[in-house]
Image (cartoon, rainbow, N blue to C red):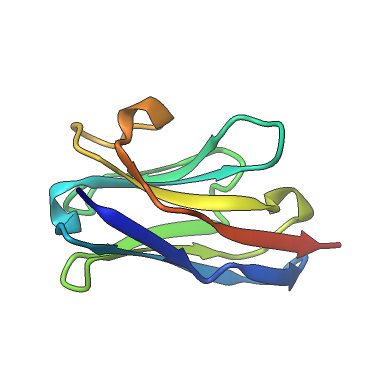
Length: 124
């Protein structure tokens, strides 16, 4: 079993930046593709970004393309999400998750382990 812990969320003004981290314990993340998702109350969990096991394949949601950057440091067993030019509509609880599948899936059902989430609030 993989335990994931997100950190780095907080309150920021529009246009600002945050960097989220997702640290894993018990298992090494190099065996998994990783994804970041976000969710607001009453809405479904939304794919934000994903990265393959080796880091050579990355995909983003259209809504964050050009503003967010996903990366991973397998030596540190950590995945990051750099978020720049934040907008109020980016406000959500952000989750990282692991996928044992091939490539970089975007469907939440393809991910098996999830963290507890970290809240990001962007004020206008």
